[in-house]
Length: 271
Image 1 (cartoon, rainbow, N blue to C red):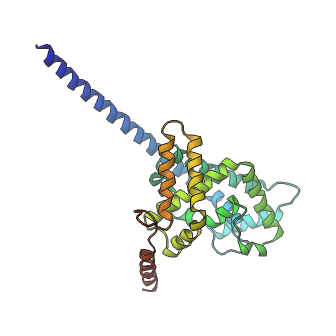
Image 2 (image 1 turned 90 degrees about the vertical axis):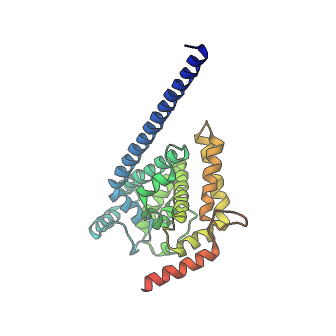
Image 3 (image 1 turned 45 degrees about the horizontal axis):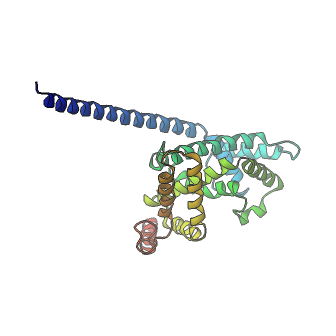
């Protein structure tokens, strides 16, 4: 057999083997992602009571909107009444650790591109975003809530305990805020949120948008070594989906479309 022909055949065979190995690696990587997603899904599902406790603490004391049943809420109320300034509220701190560490862990996977935000979003759905205000109130002390002025001293004290714990665990705190921002951008892309909520967030991001994008960029640069600039730029740009669209930009919240969406949303409610 001619040596040139042998070389050509060998090259083709090596290409086929290489392509097959690459395909296997991609399949294995995707399977490991599916396994990771399922692991986090179970972890989140099993922390339902802890999630309820965090929202109970983050909301004002008499707030109607909670995420667990009345029986569980009454248990939280009893635990709150038994609390004392002389000892830590272990039940509240334990629940907060479970929820915020889980959110932070998932955020790290997203920031390192081990998971995509579109993979993570179905784990939480819009439930986390609908409760983002009480979450932000715990994660960011500057996030004011005028309803808190009517809370009892015990409710205030427990909330302060959680806020202080998060201050001492600033990495967890930052990454939780980052994941909320990324999930909000994904939900805005999918039109999963009421237009009024999208508008309210876009209004707020007129002031905070650049800060949020810089925060994602900085965190990506810390966590990654290979390809870190590309990942940081991509994820920080992704947050623009939840900001008002700039002139000549293809992404962002369109004000005219938002008005039309609000009208359609209202019509559906009244039908």
